[in-house]
Image (cartoon, rainbow, N blue to C red; front, side, top):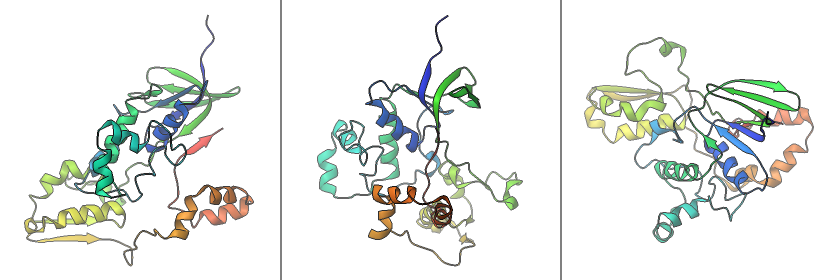
Length: 268
């Protein structure tokens, strides 16, 4: 009986975080990695691919460049493979569209043999020296687990029990847009970026809404994204090193003011 394979890392969920990790791990000799996802393939926020919607970070904050500028999986490498590098440079726009970022992610995913889609994780059990990951069709063993499952769409209590097909979460906007344009009025509820993008998109078609286009939010005001230089320092390695040098009590206090800064959980 051959010994069971034990991976160094198993990533659960293949969104941008774990896709970037998989791309960075690809070039490390001897590192055994596996990344699983229940979906058929990489597809980043398909319900919010609003025409013209752009990322809030510049193109070089892609999956790999800030960690490994020479990676073959950078956004610039993607542009080169698409024969679009010069056109992109001439355009001089640092902030690419969501659709373009999604195309880039699919391009990277197609090149990584460590990715397995159509694999739903059903359980994780601790074993001696590691973990057992149980899916619908297989069992895998690993020394470390990285959770990159992202968030789950959440409906407020007042709407969660409604059966109306036109009461839906923003994650399904694109598939419902045509039907919305047939309505005399639409109300968007929420205070986040997605609500703003949907309202702005519908605003361009406001002639359809003879009884009104409304945006309801509990926020007292609209707060623009803080893109100042000192705020951006919080994502720099120097600040991260500083944060990890703090005692646990101070870390907990600091984290309450950093709710917007999150990625994935790593179990070592």
